[in-house]
Amino acid sequence: MLHRFYARVMALAASRNAAWWLALIAFAEASFFPIPPDALLVPMALAKPRSAWRFAAICTAGSVAGGALGYLIGYAVFDQVARPILNLYGYGPAFATFQAKFQEYGLWIILIKGLTPIPYKIVTISAGAARFDFALFMMASVLTRGARFFLVATLLHFFGDAVRVFIEKRLTLVTSAVAFGVVGGFVVLKLI
Image (cartoon, rainbow, N blue to C red):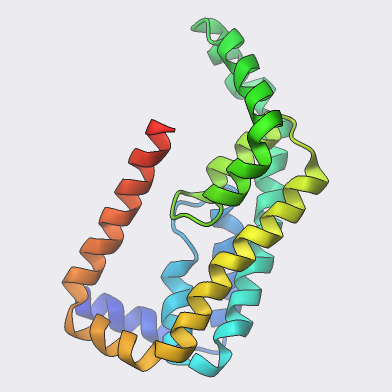
């Protein structure tokens, strides 16, 4: 079953509409969607290694645009949805402390967490909720998301065939490692 899914993703990655899907998934993941764009970026770069950097640019642009929507969600909807719940449970003062900390350390939070497998939507919505400077948020998003996706693309451009062969031979190991990375990202997020 895993090998059939892998073959379907590889076929989608090689299709002529793959770039649009990549942009859409990157946009959605940065604001509300649970699946990271790497799920499509990696097979696309494996299917067409010469286009890896173009795919990274598409992924970066989609993710940064989606980050702006995530920021807007945190900025505009947070007060109507989350703040009443926080106040109901007496966490209003704790949120005020969070906002102050995000103002002080927000740039570092955006830069560090934007490079990790921790879902970027958490950062984007938090930045909006904390009223972090939007221009600085966007610049940090371009830097960190671009670095992340271009690093993946560069590795796949130069080592794509070896990576593809490794993935195809050890698909269960690779998917287990990715799942472990995602769970580990959530654990790190809880600890921070």
